[in-house]
Length: 294
Image (tube, rainbow, N blue to C red):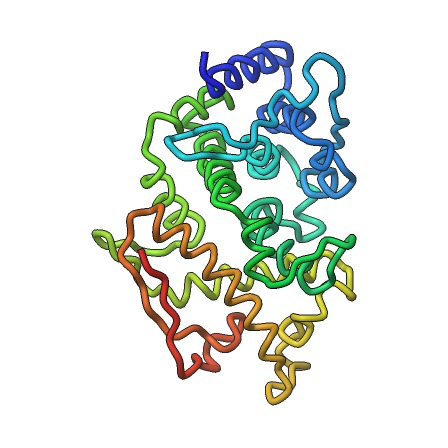
């Protein structure tokens, strides 16, 4: 039995044991079988569901770091945790009130964590460059988990598939390339013609905005100093004093993610001028181009 088959079998057992609960509740219960870090107060805030870390015989049962899903090495524990924040819950969600989004507990959070840790040297983790931080906190296996969480969540939320185990099986049948393209189209509304991504500058701006908002949401002023000017409202922002390095951090992070999307999505290389301030695109682009190669 492969790692994936074993994980799906375990998920099926949890679904049967909780047959009266919603898919949203089951997804959050599964989170308890991943890592203790995914059962903190932050995750309770993110998902609106308090879940304790499960110890004993099945401790860390879904915490495989390099499970192959849809042909792509995937951090399965990260996938399950992110999925718990992608599946809709009935009624008013806690996130409807606090501004949290599913992006923050997936790809946006991965990129934002790298920026925050690099700029603050948080918890004495020594990250010499932002690139080092991204390679540590936003690996391809993390991005694969994020995209799987979004697409599997989409399958469940659309009503096409009723259980998490069956959605994972369906996801695994389809090549990862297709999932990447689905993610780009559904999450960002970006058009792909043939193998060409249309208007990549807009996609980059959307990624950067989400990451910047995640850092702001953390409500830790000493940790988002590098992007403080970017995060001011339009009326307060003094454009002449915009800290270039803040936009630079966001751009490096978004291009890191774009590289994964272009390469894994089998897309043609892109070259474009990024917007100076992603939240205010009418202010124009930089006079230089950036590129993402396949």
